[in-house]
Image (cartoon, rainbow, N blue to C red; front, top):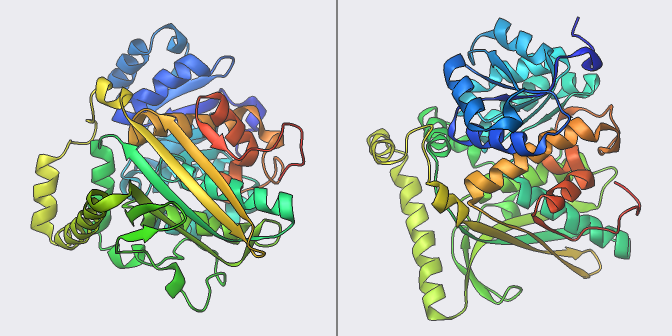
Length: 417
């Protein structure tokens, strides 16, 4: 019988804490997790102790737990010691399944930063019903994949509903960003290709509950060509993270179908923004062509091995200076069934895949730890959820307090979810 949450040794365990993003989560918790009981976890005690020491006095009281990603008994013990697990140990298809199963069995909430949608589909199939019945929130995708998209689209749709009492029929998101790539992100992509998941990744409703995909999925297909967009007065190109983020947003809309602001057939797409003029047009076209060529080339194993040889290895990533100089901006435009419009924005400083991802996932875990009674659906809601459906407005407000631009937010104290 799992130990009651109130009797557990820790509030949050950071799994994969010695990895590239994992070390950043430790530093974040050392600065922000005041009053919480937390621990570092992974497969190497010496490396975990070094990470804890490097994080300074704020981490001095953090625990150390050792568990291999395939050791079911060790992970069950780990999950049973804490209310929440935050995992940065990817690729998740290789290192996440046993940990999620342990969390569901032990009644432990879980968040991660995965963009591996085929793996998320697998844990939905294996664990959604059990987690929902147990009131356990399993929340993948709490990094730059896919918080700006998912939370932004939900906030825009909700604002339209509150202002006009009309459901949202569409949201378009455009991104601008600068930042680097860490080795774990590339490893996850290459593993998905190595295991033959590309065809499954192409399904625009991969993460939807059964029976919620429309009969005609063509309007929801991923864009492949550049476009001169009149709404944003800019040249746009397909966003390389769109095939991940759009699936998460569509799951949010489906999960909210009976109680939320999304219209039947809700449309969501996202793009990279390049501005106006011939140079912007050329850049958008070049990116679209280059992305298509890269996707084709990566279908071949020798090309994937070559990419792996020249890219950062797992555990490596951009320099501190490069991460500090990064930034991202996600601008959104939603429309209601009556034609009303609502703008939104999720933006922040710091490298999106590292600095922003760290804030997103740490604040997701802190929201679960500190505000369980204010979460959407109350403390008893569970399942394999999305950031918006699991964490809602209380999460948005924590992100805003952490320095992220989050719009539109309602006035404090107004009607909840």
